[in-house]
Length: 441
Ligand SMILES: Nc1ncnc2c1ncn2[C@@H]1O[C@H](COP(=O)(O)OP(=O)(O)OP(=O)(O)O)[C@@H](O)[C@H]1O
Ligand SMILES: [Mg+2]
Image 1 (tube, rainbow, N blue to C red):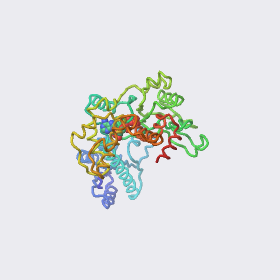
Image 2 (image 1 turned 90 degrees about the horizontal axis):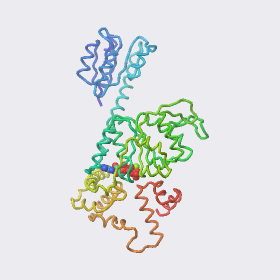
Image 3 (image 1 turned 120 degrees about the horizontal axis):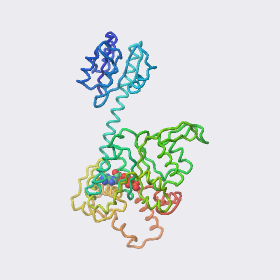
C-alpha cells in the first residue's frame, strides 16, 4: 500500500533530510517550509500522515491541524516543536487530538520511527474502516411489508440518536439484526457493539460481568477485568433476552441506567457509562411486568422506543423476497453457485407458517441447497419433511423413545440451536437437556 506524507518545518535541512530518508520506503512524500504552502497542499491533496512544526515563519502549525482534520478521512498528525508546552491547558487538548507530539532535538531515525508508527496506526484505521463497510453491507433488512418498511425507517432514525430501544418479537424474527442495523448504520458504527445474552449470566457473576472487577476483589479475581459497560464504551450494549434476566440483576442494572455511573467490583473509582442500550426479548414484557417477573421501572427505562417485529406468518408477503435474498447469501457463504429455483418454487414457501421465523427459513434453505447440490431433488417440502412437522403427531406410529428424541431435536432447531432456550421451552434443566442431546447424537 502506498502512503502519502506531508512534512512541514522551516528548518529546511531537517525537513529535506527527513524527506529523503522517508523516500527510501515511501514514494509519496511532500515537503514544505511555510504555513501558506502547507495550507495550499492540504487543499489540493489528502494525506495519510502530516508532520507539522508548530512555529512557522508565517503561521502556527496548530492551525494546520484544523485544516488537515477537514479531510474526509483525517490524517494521523505528528506535531514537532522545540518548546515544551505541557504546562499549557489549551495545548493539552490539542495534544490529545493528534497522534503524536515530539520535542526537539531528536535525530532523524527517531523521527522516522514515529512516522512509521503513525503509518501503522493509519493502516489499522483503514482496515477497520473497510471491515466496517463490509459489516454494514451485510446487515440488510429485507421485506416489503408495511411493518418491515416502517421498522427500517425507524431503525435508520434511531441510529443517530441515543434513546434506549426495546425490540420484541418471536424467536428468529430478526431482533439482533435490527439492533445491529441501528448500531452499524449510524454515528456509533465504529464503536463497539457488545451483545450479551442475559439468560446465560451465572448467578453471582452479574456485577463482575457487567461492571468488571479489580484484581483481588474476590477469590479467583487474579487480575483486573473490564465489564461489559466498559467494553461497550460509547458504543452499544445489546441486552439480548432481557426478559430472562433475574429480578435481582434487574435492580442493579436499573441503578446504572439511571445514574449512568458504576464501579468495578472491589474498585473505588466511579466510572461513567456512555453506552447506548438496545434490549431484546421474545416475551411480552408488559405481561411479565404484570406477573411480577419483570420490574416495571426497568421496563419503562428500557422501552423509551419500542420496536415489535411481527412473525413471518403475519407478513407473508416478506417470505419470497427474504428467501430469494437468503438463497444468494447462503450460496455466497457456502461458496457454491446453485441457480435459484423459479417463482412457483418460492411461492410454495408461503404455504408454511415458519414458526421459527426467518432463522427457520434460512436453516431450511441452507439444508435444501446442500441436499440439492448432492441429489438434485426439487420438491420443497418432501425433501425436508417440513410438512409433517406442521402436525403434532407423526402419521406413522413410532416408538416413544424415538418420538421424544425427535421432539427434542425439533425443539432444539426451533430455538435456534440455543441450549438454554431449548431447556427453558421444554421445562427441563440445562444439564438434563445436554445429557439427552449427547445421548441422541
Ligand atoms: N428481514 C430480514 N432480512 C434479512 N435477514 C433477516 C431478516 N430477519 C431476520 N433475518 C436473518 O435471520 C436470522 C435470525 O435473525 P436474528 O438472529 O436477528 O433473530 P432474533 O429475533 O434475534 O432471534 P432469537 O430470538 O432466536 O435470538 C439472522 O441470520 C438474520 O440475519
Ligand atoms: Mg437473537
